[in-house]
Length: 411
Image (cartoon, rainbow, N blue to C red; front, side, top):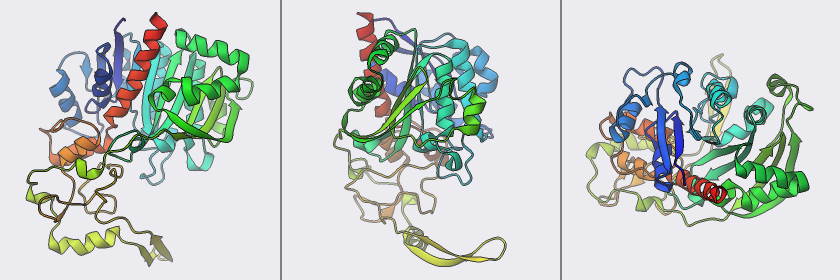
């Protein structure tokens, strides 16, 4: 089969590239861009070029300034920045926020280049963002794809449910252009049986269903149009749309069908299998005088607190496992791992029995990267890069499904 020319946006330390290249040698990254605003040292880009080489095809620049250099390609991939959708960011503004606006740079590239296929990744909250107008942001994205002639599949995937070591939930989007045989087959079948076909593609025949098999589904569903007869423009979608989308769905010719599915689970990897078996450096261990504060951060709370205006309120939250269970996959990695906080992981060390935080290598393993992939940058940045990274094996699963469809189309 022919090689698939790949452009990788918001490349980070190369998770998409690693995942695709593990799926097939036919995925050829011909251009990539990685740039972290407000950082003088571009550690992620340096890591990327350390592994994949330095050259004109690897760019470290704001995509708004570099998008004119994007070459013709077959597959566009990227984990477009998610802070404006993330539940961890207070007051997140979704697609209207500073980093949420980077979607429009992706949109312009789609408008100009029209690649045959697109794979994007974002936080699970994306499909229901923003809180005050659920479904608006994702509907805007779907409308943008529709206007450019794409069909779209999406799934919210918990990596641990498909054999990985981390309970990381992320939205994956796969789109294919109306010039592809896969789109044309879907469109022809949808014209005959509409929702039954769309449902079948979500459950069994679609690229996402082939990558992430489904065990069952719930009866509730969403059936909605986002075409010109309902919304006159993207701006109209932004102003009026409100819809509760489920974790799986498909859009073609402006019609959206969404349903809740149960995954066909693959046994996950427990955290204990990821931990380093050799001696861990002392600075990862929790000091005795810090233990009471760690215990407080992880514990249940119901206590009076004061707002900035002096008024009092009762703050409450439940307890977290302390230390984290070694018999389950890890929780979602965060960019500030090891910081003394409620969300950082704490484990019991294999050799000493003492409590400690995760090492950079353990974080790399939880995301499916090779050991020491991020070595060479400050340790704080290694955690930052892994907190932002995707789970590489999930990309491989999507890559395998996409390659299978392309091979079938080329017969």
